[in-house]
Amino acid sequence: YIHAVSYVANAKILIEPFGMLEVRNSAGSEFWKFAAEPISRIEYQHQAVFYYNVSGTIAFGTSIITYFPGVAANVIPVFRVNASVAVGSGTTTTLNGLLEISAGRTLTFQNAGLKELRNGIAGSGIVVQDNTCGQIRINGSTSILGGGALTLSTNGLAIEAGVCTLVSDKVINSGAVTVGNGATLNAQQYSLTNVAAASFILSAGATLITAHANGVNGSIQLSGSTSFQDFANYSFTG
Image 1: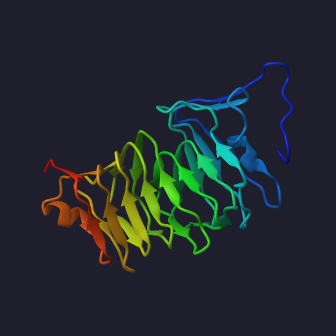
Image 2: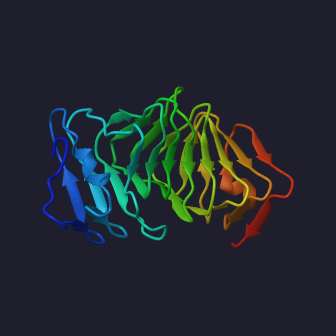
């Protein structure tokens, strides 16, 4: 749809687990609003998918936008992007779910607003944080980090809360990854690596869990600066 959906009385669209709502267009529409409608109108259940499958470089909205509004903390829908687009504004963009970038696609975040990706980043595509972009924040009680390369800039990426689990080796280029006080990075047997030097900060009160054969050094293989602050926590599970 272009600007709005007309609902009759208490009508509602329900996307059930593993169901998918796909949008396609070729010029200038706002079909992304199918993922930003109030939950009373469009409800995405756990692992339901909104599939942004547009042609060209048509960006989805990001100015004071919340995607999947009202979903419970344990309900994790997926925002799947099959387009190479640049998005972002001077205000916060919130995604109450998992961002997934399709193979062969690049999503570029720009402009100073925060990019809050509650349940993390997945998919084989590339995510770029340009030099104008505000911090990328992961703050769900559970989240994942995996898939294609992530290129960061000055403001970097912060895991602010909950447990973020690496589900594959992850290339982090430039910028810094920070695990904040009270948050946990569960690296499992995987590694953070880089091509262009990236940095890592494990804050006081943060936790790193590793099952890598080489422990912390195996999990964090970034060639930039690393800071393991006093009173950080470590768990070796391999």
